[in-house]
Length: 401
Image (cartoon, rainbow, N blue to C red; front, side, top):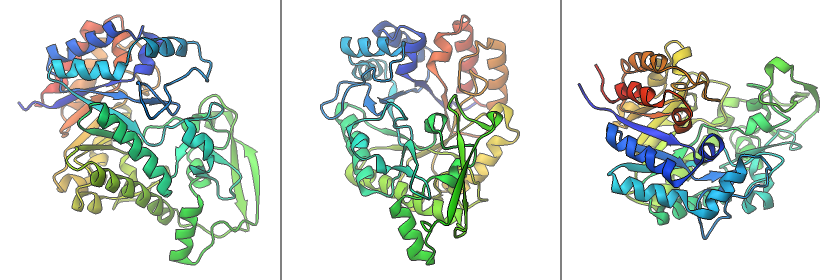
């Protein structure tokens, strides 16, 4: 029997939505993790581009989105600093706490983001024609975007964190964009000038040359979220090698990771990305960037890698993820699973599932080969009437057969 590292995803925004977001609620979570032998937790640091902690660099979260539950979040942030409290609780209990720095979940229309992206909306992913933006998903081909997120990392490390958890997969922007469709959004966006110019330099093809375009509504069954959405279709326009386009975009993400290692030597970095974002391997159209596994390992840009999926509903998902991540795994980088659907069918909303369903999930996933896992998320435990039994069922993740 070998013990695995299990972490809890604490989305403080959601705790204020379905809980009370109090200091006592946070303390209870850390007490329970310590009692049960968990490794620790990761905690969200920004919401809609604003800080979920007291920062001298970044504006504290305000209630500009006018959602009812964020009144409690704003009130709690005025009372105390949840991240500083969580850091103290983790230290006192000998638990690890990782700051969840999301790269592609910045903000979404109509609420804007922090001052940086309000002043520079062109840094969000742009359509091929340049008329539309995917608000909330920055393009890392811009040096300014990379520097901005390096400043966020610096702020979190100065706050007291000793490692970084960089999220390059989980995002909600497409659910709030009128210009998506799935997976068509990947063919609409990501043509920002630095990417298109580099594509032209390598191929001689000008992707920004547009003959004409049409927009049409996305059928309701194909829409994401609650916003009415539209396809964008181009005609008399040069063909695009999307794999090359996404590789150029991935080089921007790699340059950011390189900057993290250069600015913060010795700070461990966990990278969360979808396994389709990795090279080599079959090309998946539903991603915005491709990474070079060999480069990640050779330059030691990451210390751990984790990928997310609805593991219970996707046959062979773990084997596929390991295959697509084989270059990283072969390089000795620990491989983790973000358990998106362990407490919720699709990771979206809590469904109050029984402890027995959680136990069956645990029994299946523990047969897989992985080094660590993240349970998504704290809210789905605290809001479950059978929370003690659910915690007990989750204990099975700590060991493998």
